[in-house]
Length: 196
Image 1 (cartoon, one colour):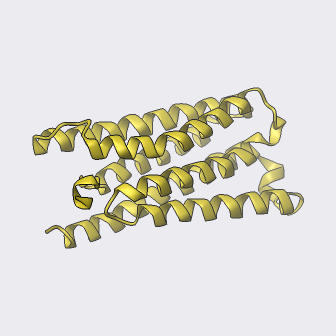
Image 2 (tube, one colour):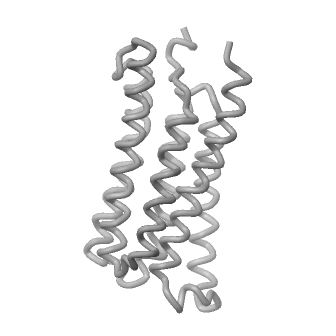
């Protein structure tokens, strides 16, 4: 009974698609010079939607390849677990559009998004067979560390003074892009070993 409630599709391709989207989004933000609070927020909202669509495309391909329904019961459970934290992160982004945090929003938002995303992954991890909950805890830890550093040591951080938007794009690419790619490699190695 418990096994039938778990999401059984391979997570590595989905996580890799999200990681690639994050790296590309970060690179575009840095190279094009997407700046300002509104530009940063809109850019990363578009990247987040792109990552979600890429993940859904991979999941749909896997379902079609296995001859299964795309919107299966385990998929619904994972989506329901992700939704509250995803919506909360989106709401914080929309509030950021109003520049409630003014110019420093670009340094606060990545930490908040890491926290919301970590909560989403941890919740979804109860319906997956792999270490998604641990990956969620890693995001929670990184978000907490980043916010502690930002709130306590900003006067001593040279990148916070020189170009906060460029460095916020780099932070997003490192955490959401490279972090997902590293986890995808781990999943690829462990999923192949544990196929029964």
